[in-house]
Length: 184
Image 1 (cartoon, helix red, strand yellow):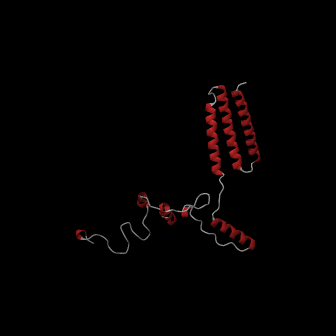
Image 2 (cartoon, one colour):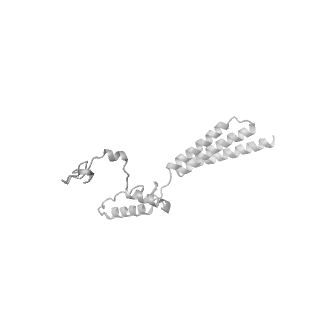
Image 3 (spheres, helix red, strand yellow):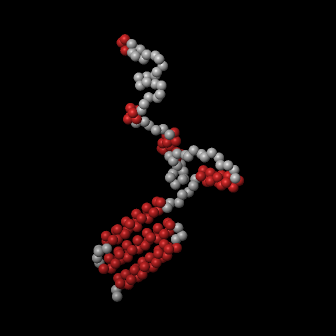
């Protein structure tokens, strides 16, 4: 037995031990992210086993499977982590929830519901935290908070004039037709 044989078997044993530890973490948890990371580790170890086998045998038979395993592991971990991200409530949400719980405990009637805030106002993030505005984006945040909606050229042509006015001008009884020479 050569040194390569010894290193091959020691490496395969250590990789198998790593798979067993990762399978235990998948089984035990405690959170979904722990399980996702463990499955990613298992996929990396499977790719490593194939790479060690290719180095030992001197062939490149499994290279496609190694690349596919790595891509699946990476994309799967990113996709699942994207949807399992932990939401940190900002201080306004925490205060509002505390007040609601206090009202529920004291049996006070619920107050009028607040108008929901715009998801685009004051630098709100989708996960509930807040983003500090800097000078380069403050104008955009102010514009978003104002509720300004630009009209398109098509919308101007298709809209009807407000009631009580004619398309030619105000209906105040005066004649707005130009006089001789184009003067009014």
